[in-house]
Image (cartoon, rainbow, N blue to C red; front, side, top):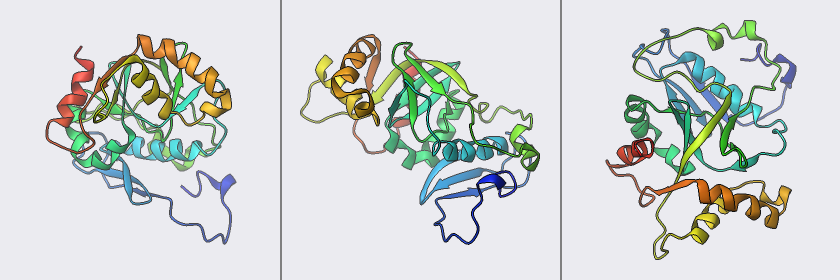
Length: 234
């Protein structure tokens, strides 16, 4: 990784270990070995794809560079199935160990981004290309053609129509158009870049056309993977 990102290396800087990558021997998604990426103490990638673990780290580092203009940045965890995107609450990543296998079996793959990029007008999730200068020869496994049935292929850069956005249940608040709009607005990171009134005006038609779902309380129970999988069943 140091060779791959040599142009960004800084000598003798006591930086904290923000990311840690754990790779294992064995190739392909059918390997029994798991690969992990941790951000501080939180696991953000749990995969059998060596290439996904490597690319995922680069995706997270890529977010320190300027993001594409004109896109809403949202705190959500994105999944893709059959070319369509589903957004769920970001805190679910703390249960990645419990969610990954059942969701992979259901055909979902996680989008390895810290911040979700949304084109409100097109109602699409945008997975950007890498802007980092990477020495690809130093990371041959990142471009390895893998295959297997245990886990769907990593999500490639591109645009994915957003089918549903799920939120935790809010006690004492009945769902309404206004509460849905508020939840969407509270999930944004860069609303003030566009202006609050402008963001709300752009979110209103997006929210009206979007299927917003409730996946219960912000606590894990055994029904949670099925609730998430059901987002693609309607």
